[in-house]
Length: 183
Ligand SMILES: Nc1ncnc2c1ncn2[C@@H]1O[C@H](COP(=O)(O)OP(=O)(O)OP(=O)(O)O)[C@@H](O)[C@H]1O
Ligand SMILES: Nc1nc2c(ncn2[C@@H]2O[C@H](COP(=O)(O)O)[C@@H](O)[C@H]2O)c(=O)[nH]1
Image (cartoon, rainbow, N blue to C red; front, side, top):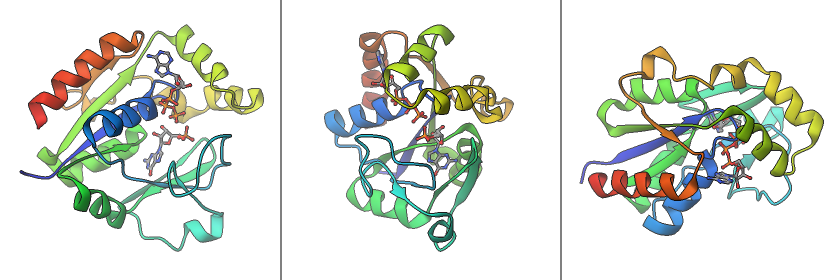
């Protein structure tokens, strides 16, 4: 089978990580672990959810792409993708839309882009319910990156499948159909 990578993209809080966990738990689709300098959230584990880095240690890795999102660095390495592809031909990664564009340029047809979206008021409620610090949520909601990622970028318009995550059961059915086509 040709190796493929599912790119889960969209604004913060739209459910990218939730979908990534679902794909791993139900379909054994490994997630590529990326690097970040942001503060660890409660419940997150180093080496599982992210490789948590200091600004100095972040610079020591070599990245396929890296971005600054809401004042913190995030990056994904080729080694990380290769590690996931050693486990399975179909893997997933969670990226902002800037990273998603880079992946489409780099991987072409191997990249399957899923853009997640939902009703804005519900999105805000979910971010607060996730338990992050209120000041950090407010800062994130105001960030240019968050605002940018609410819409599908022009470069991904004809590439990305748009999935609405207002209702988990409905989204799950759509994901199941997508995975059936890919496997
Ligand atoms: N369909 C759903 N119904 C109810 N809650 C949901 C649904 N999908 C996700 N959530 C919840 O919404 C919150 C945000 O989801 P998640 O962390 O997966 O988003 P994300 O896009 O990965 O965010 P970020 O980019 O900030 O990491 C989580 O608390 C998650 O449990
Ligand atoms: N371009 C990249 N984007 C990434 C990477 N790892 C995560 N992300 C995206 O950053 C924001 C913020 O994430 P959060 O965990 O702090 O909420 C979100 O959109 C992620 O999808 C990466 O390596 N490259």
